[in-house]
Length: 170
Image 1 (tube, rainbow, N blue to C red):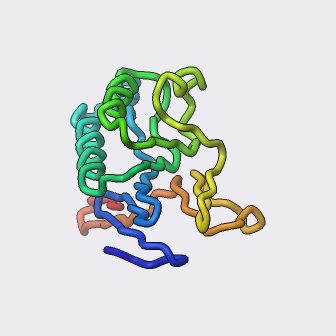
Image 2: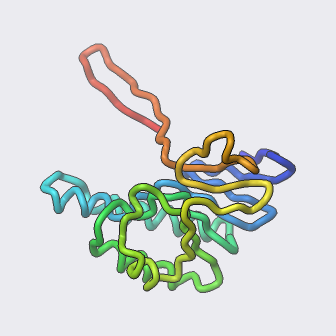
Image 3: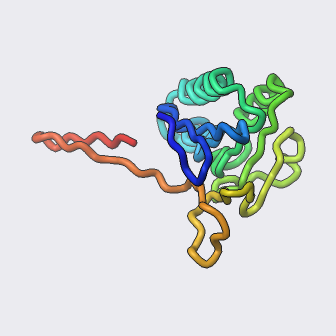
């Protein structure tokens, strides 16, 4: 779906991404790379295929839109350092013509030195590219100088069956 907003052309993609045509920028929030590995390390069952799916979806978006920059609106990596970080840095290296930029989120807790080993540009807490301001958390009205794009909130719907079954969907 393509919409016009503040005089800008935004492509809404079903893989939960927005492509900002005028800036050739791909917006992605709350990727949570490494989440499955983190859960497994804590003894919780989580399929390793989740990481593969995240990388496959990201790669599909990069080839589909061919962006000049990718803006991660926080929570790029889920928690403490694990093997997914190395895979991610190798993945980024495969796209040398794209600027990868992270607006810090509450789960982006890796030491600053780790982020510096990657090609990521890092912003904390916001990035302004008129007519938009990008953040991880929604900004208060008094902080807004531009329209705010943010992540963090995970809206969804819960479907309930007659037998007590539940299914939560984005």
